[in-house]
Image (cartoon, rainbow, N blue to C red; front, side, top):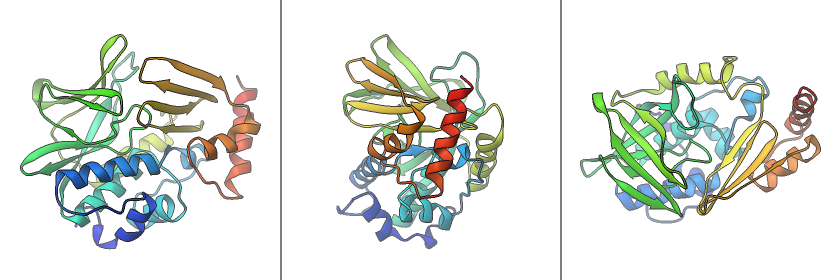
Length: 276
């Protein structure tokens, strides 16, 4: 098995995401699983912020995201989701995406996504992009437009077979990320993960990032600022003092911290606030 799905505790995962529906190799199951996963498991980089190694082996992912009820970023989330889909019987492949959202210059390929084939048709599945991510799979067909929870997404096809995920906002269409048809494997995710978790130019290093997509509203915590975005285009922002960080992570993002991590993250937030 490519994604080590033979090691997966499927029942524990389904309980973690609160899914009690049918499990079959069909589009309805794929949609329901991604929707439940995104709603239950938050996007967060706390291990990176604390300077720790981020393991991607399935045992470690299950222990953290399922057992400890923590979240993770794209390599963790989509590696776990790939194992779940593989265990059920889906045909699933990894892809590497270049993020274009809010990019003033070309970025490296650092985002991990999945392509799942259902009845001969490829679908983009992504549980690990964070606040601006899709809530359900999107058919990989040029010109596709879908509405998910009040957010509108589209797929366009560029030269060399590159697919682009786009989103429609108050100012029109904007690219989210783009990916080539080349298949990536867990080993490739490991290389990308090393860059994102250690390179000084990575936006995940040295700061706390937490995001939660959802229908009608999205929450994002970045550089000590909490933003709440709505489908009507309004956006609320406020600073999160270091003393409120742990409660915000818990109450808004559903991130459960142990007694060791909470004070370390609070201290990191205080250092960041003092260096502003």
